Length: 233
Image 1 (tube, rainbow, N blue to C red):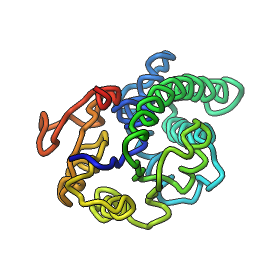
Image 2: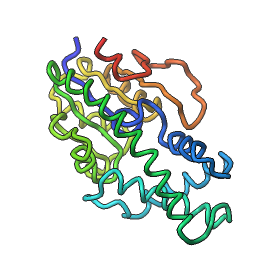
Image 3: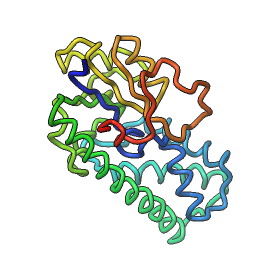
Image 4: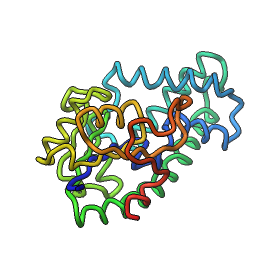
């Protein structure tokens, strides 16, 4: 019997299963930037590694500000490779266009996710478990999601990151329920589904466009969905 839910945030609530790397790439495509996917991927990895190693994202950063930093770092790498204009209005304008496309899309997706979360909250306690930068509380408030989760487990705060199952164990402890009565919903098979399964939770994989080809159709996931709306069916 299901008695509680644990949700991932990035890629689950804000993009409906699409990996953020692919989400940004499609914005580049939409805007017609003359960058190959391989060149973009290198820039994406550069930006993510830079953010992991340096305290660039501050606790008071909104999601928009966080996204601006990600895109700034990507363009920094592309500049160094001579793939985009080095200075001037054009550079800033292109960065702003990427952020605007992505942010507007996320606003729409999160609004849809919020409806599902509020419906589930009527019957179940909800906990959020996320690899994030220390500003997830600000981000939740920005999108009107504050107050929905009974507790928030954020990697930057608890100093444990997925795929370490211990971060999900903290979520189980927050719910104060047996793991077999908890459903974990996430977009990453390796970082969400496998560790949650390993500690006895039921798992729902929201499967969208991934960063790398998926080797399994379902694996250990108890259920595969393509939209959070399917949870209310």
